[in-house]
Length: 111
Image (cartoon, rainbow, N blue to C red; front, side, top):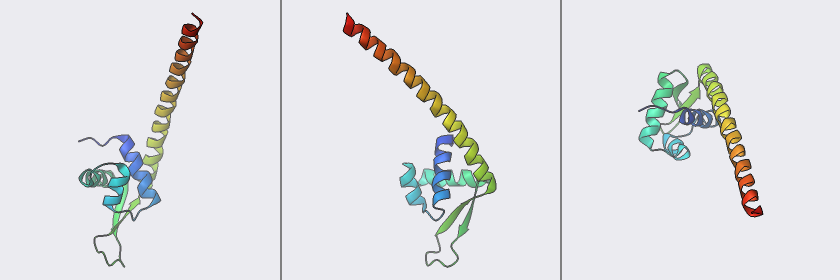
């Protein structure tokens, strides 16, 4: 199962904002299952984009911190740049479609 860039970007953003977020909370925020979230975190860990640390003073010994590494921060910036380019292209295409539809509606109204 491939991990798409949109999911990677969203996960990295959420983890950067709240490294103590649980996998269950992360899954809910991403709109995916806890199992897929675990897969996503493992993929990010394998790529060296995050590191996982246990809370030392936590009563819940299963609580973790998901910290972005310098490589993870760089990867997030690269993915965000590609995401922005893609969305800008989609926006331009949508604007062109809206202009065509307006012209069509105007032409139909005049006839």
